[in-house]
Image (tube, rainbow, N blue to C red; front, side):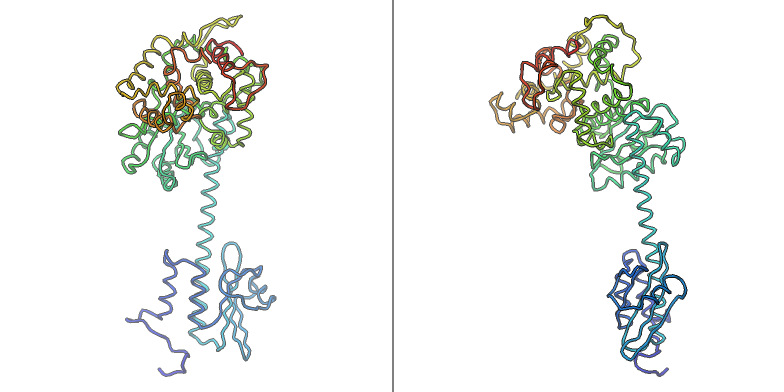
Length: 526
């Protein structure tokens, strides 16, 4: 069939599959080629003209700016007409409406020669492809927003549980996940992976738990995924991830009430530290990891009540808020605790300073942190144990509590270090006394700071605890070590008087520290 050059002749692909330009256009619908800008650029070359894609407000979405009649554009985007054509001696213009969920756009094509049948077909079909791509992109964006909103909602529920507001947490969860928090108890798991693959791990956790668990990307640790589940089968489902992903670790808590989610979370993190030294890369918080279970529960509860007695005068909600914040603040940095709780780091610090003032202690000292941490754990773990409310401050001392089975446990734990000829136990003693500061411990021992770090690091797999990574914030990792590595009763040789002015961190006089430790050891109010 004869025709003018550039006229109506249709280029056929081999085998009569259709025009070559149609095949090229369809290539842009493949997953790797879905880009509106690339489609507009292709159209410009296909029709040998200028192409612009703009929205109803006149904003250029793709292509090069073309001067258009505003009234004509308004008629097209408003739905009065679907397309328009305009011609002059110098320019030929086609405008086509492109619909998508958030509004309409105008595809404008300008060229020097008139539009023949081929050029018109190319413009019409390209407009349809752009419409599909815009719709798909908006669906993708909407899906991402929905997933982000769902993720934020899960985090909000976790933060409510962390501060013991189970009523509000259940109300929020009921809308999207009915029945998720109907149970009174749950276990908390922490899955650790490389931050680069955390999103994929979180999706797998959702899939394996069949969305019967609260799966949250930890706001404080980039590689952690937190799972709160009342189901007994969740632990086994999460352990199956280890076989598929050799570079992940799993730590789990014992079953706790929903109001004690913060405690369960701390247990899971503690178990996660142990999992790093296990061949199967999994661990559950067990008896051997919380030696307070080896102490006389009534005596321990009575001692705890005396230590925390200054907080009893506070309103219930204020006391619960301070205790929950302090518990996490002793486990993690102020920044991490703030992210988990959904408050500012200054709020965390202010709450902990208030607890310090009420108890008359200073959390800059590792052993003081360890003692208060023990009291907070007991307050949560043994809340219903009856004990005698003494009219005076007389009662069991911490030194008495640390005797018997607890001492045997500690001797067995620290005895594992005796086989090392470098005497890491001595190094640990100095390191703890120096507040977890390797430089100050090195000065006391007369060795290099790197030697101190190497000794402490070598003790980690033996004790199944992360020490260097935790110091000086994560009290749970080292409080048993602190308790027996320093002396028979390390707290009997550490405070400041309540009336004394507060010293900056790192400048607490040693004499006052000794008073703090003595009072905490005996359970006397400071």
